[in-house]
Each structure stands twice: as C-alpha cells, then as structure tokens.
Length: 242
Image 1 (tube, rainbow, N blue to C red):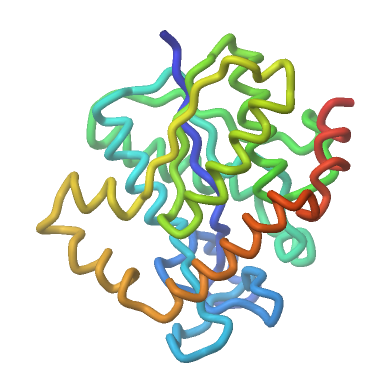
Image 2 (tube, rainbow, N blue to C red; image 1 turned 45 degrees about the vertical axis):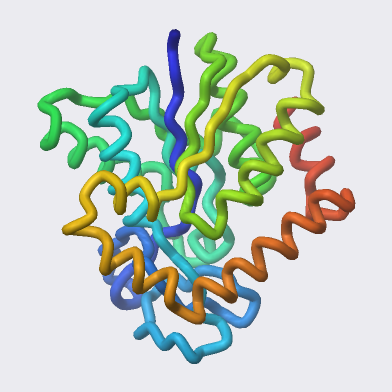
C-alpha cells in the first residue's frame, strides 16, 4: 500500500535581513502583532505576548525519525504557496528549503534518498496560503499518485486543528472519500524515538508560555472551523479545484 508523508508548514526565517540564510523556524519564536512569521529571527522571549511555538526544524527531525522506519513512497513538505512575509522580501519556497533539509538528513540516516515533491506555485496555481489549503494540496497530490494513506506531522499544539481540517476535507470532497490519515505530534515522535536526546527539548516547549498561547490560538481556529467561519475555506477549495 502506497503512503504519503506530509510535513505541515511552520515557516522559514533568515538570521538577518538580506542575508538569505533561510532555515526552518526554531522550536519557539516571536511573531509579528498578528502572529505571522517574521522574515528575520528575533531573540525569543517567553513573556512577549506574540511568542508562540515555531517548530519548523522539529517537524523535519520528526519526519526523519518516522521515515527511517516506514520509508513512505512520497514526502510533501510545506506543500503550499509562499506566505506574504516571504513574497514581500522575495524569499524562497518553504517547500524547497524544508524538502532539501529533510532529504539530506534522511539519506544520511538510512542511505536511501527519499522521494520528495516540492510545491510549484505556477503549476498548482492556487491563490491562498494557509493550513486548510496546504492540506487540500497534500490530499490532491496523494490522489494524483493513487495514494490513499496519508501520514501528517505537525507540532503538538497544531495537531488538533490539523485533524479537524483533514476530516472536513475527507468527508466534504468526493475525490478524497475513503482516504486514511494519521496526524503525529512532532514532539512526541522525537521524545519516544530518543528520550535522552529530546526529552529536555520537548519539555522546554511544553513548559513554556508560548505553548499555552499557541494552544489558545489553535483552539480559536478549530472553533472557527466548526462554525464554518474559518478564513477563505470555500474560496480556497474552489480555487484549488480549477
């Protein structure tokens, strides 16, 4: 049975403006006033009201740990358009940065080169960049490759909203009917895979104020999803279908 492994986007950043050393977000980050990712990292401060869980690198490490065991047929990383903070500064595709980092780490661990699909904005021609659209893209990629089993990896605080979105896609979209999915917490995958290495790192996240802020934001998003007022859902789905 063919399977797809998907990394949900958490953004990429650079160390200084114009430097171009784009890498996945740290475990804990400070965002702008709207909780949007900043193009340039700033020092983390847990007391900052806009400090939340980032976890871009954490997701990659968790996917490497899973792929080492399962070696999925296809891997999709941050599978959606660039966010505005990237287009504003001419930043690269997060899908490309994350995909390359994952492939390099996975090959070093297993000796096998994973099959990674990098998102192509011109080919997919979708208008939106949000988790709802990203999941729609991943499920569409799976069906195009005759894959019915999708495993998703997200930071722990994000898994509940991801699960709710995935279920809505599967039950609402006829072409996704019958698809199976499972959502893994990056933190728990790593803690279980190598407690000596990751327990303190994961505890730092779970014990932070940023984690609680992120949980609240995610719950608000999940509530909006269930009420049918989550931003751009109907428009994003329609755009992806054209």
